[in-house]
Length: 140
Image (cartoon, rainbow, N blue to C red; front, side, top):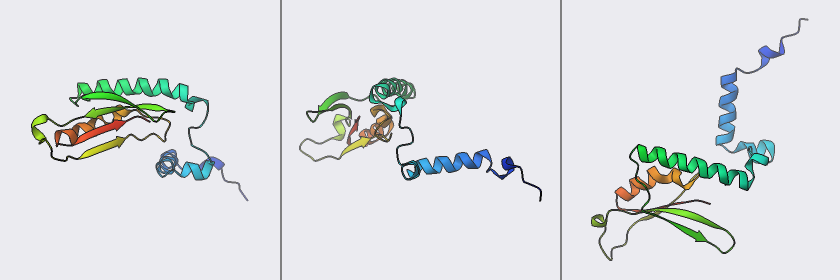
C-alpha cells in the first residue's frame, strides 16, 4: 500500500492556532503540560517586573492619548511581606452625596499572576468612576 504524506495528515495551521488559543483561554495548559505555559527564565519575577512596567507605561500613554482618564491618585499597599500599587479612580464630587454609601469596585487585571499591569484597568475604572463608583485597579 502507498504511504500517505505525514504533512497532509496534520491539521491546517489556522486550526492548530485556534485549538492552542482555546486551550490557553480555558487554562487547559495546566492539565496538558502540568505547569503554566509561559514558565521559565523569561517569566522570572525580575524579568517580568521590567517588562510589566514597560508595558504599563505604554498602555497608560496610549489610553491617555485616546481620552481615557488618568487615575486620581496611586497608593501603595502592603501586607508586611509584599507590596503593590493601586490606581484610584474617584467619581466627580457632585455625583456623590456626603454621608451616602457608594459603590466601590476593585479591578484585578488578568495575567496568570505573572504578567499584566494595573493600567489595564483604566478604561473600566474610568467608566465606573464616571457613573458614580469608586474604582481601584490593583497590581499584584
